Image 1 (cartoon, rainbow, N blue to C red):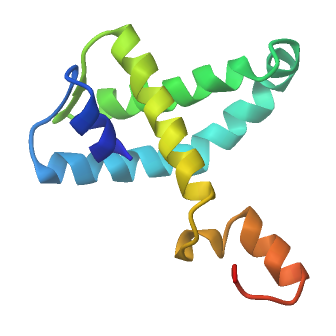
Image 2 (cartoon, one colour):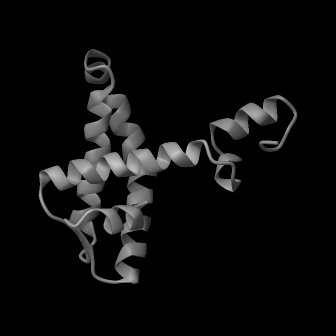
Length: 120
């Protein structure tokens, strides 16, 4: 996802392939550990804002990633907003694309309940 962001947006720069891998790893860890906690904490605001608050939680995950990883640079707030939108769109596309990443996700749970291992 972050490679797509760096390729599409001129305000996102990655110094090396190692920096891109480090950014992807940090982004993944933040989304796994911190994002669920922040989503619970921001639930009342998210309900009042029809979920827009969770966009800012995602934006925060990307901002923290750029602050932690030295070779991953996002210039400006609006570039960060665009990058967050691109990450969301790529995730949405992956949700509807069959592949091994769906086995542990929502569709995998649904298919296991139906007696299938994955999408047909």
